[in-house]
Figure 1 (cartoon, helix red, strand yellow):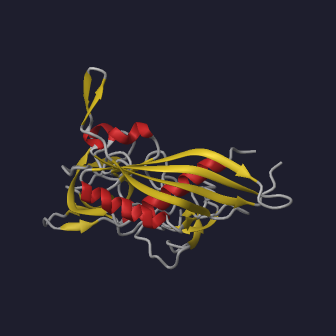
Figure 2 (tube, rainbow, N blue to C red):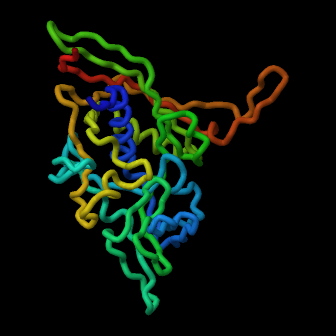
Figure 3 (cartoon, rainbow, N blue to C red):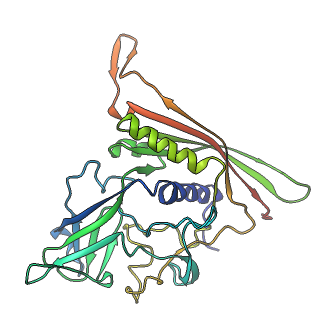
Length: 313
């Protein structure tokens, strides 16, 4: 019997994807015709790796950001934000899910006449985390137009100072499980804090308002993740590296299979407040200068719960 992801981890990733891909999807930026530079030290495996050359601050390559791997969601109703299609998942099984983006990252090559020609997506893979293009051949002065996540979204405190603000940290804390009916079934409740670190008051207020509206009286799907998350360990769309038909983006999809006999993740008692800290804190006789990350902070706290009808031996 293979390893199955724990319920807590499924909740964690489902909440992460809901906040990053749906709630914060408007906090994106577009950079056009940015230079791609060949990474000569990574070209010994019959591939050509090109890295984004940008001076943007914050950088798209910082932890928790990266390029967008889905096309923009269309809010059909409160339950389904992405239109699912039939295809294969990352392990080649039949799936119903979301294909890799087709408009968020466009790669160009300089022609002999000096014009920029679009390269077919079947000729390269995309490392969405580190903002790299992995080509099957050498490219002539390549450029890229891309959409990237302006807000860094992480789920561990150690990653906070790895990126410039704005950064949000998702922190799932205590757990409470109790029966809710006669017979089988239980309610699982988690305490969740979202910490917001912004670069100015206006940015902080905009992010808090968007997050609060995305949580108050809202819910999200709890996914089963039969093949893991969306991206592989190297930042490429899961299954793309081994696909025999790379031009067909229905091979492979992010499998949106939901956990069976488990309700949606519900958000309750959503509370937002600003965290006002002095720029200089005194500890004994020593004065400690706080980092810029602490200048414009907020915190959103809520209960996340769901009802579980599964019978677990």
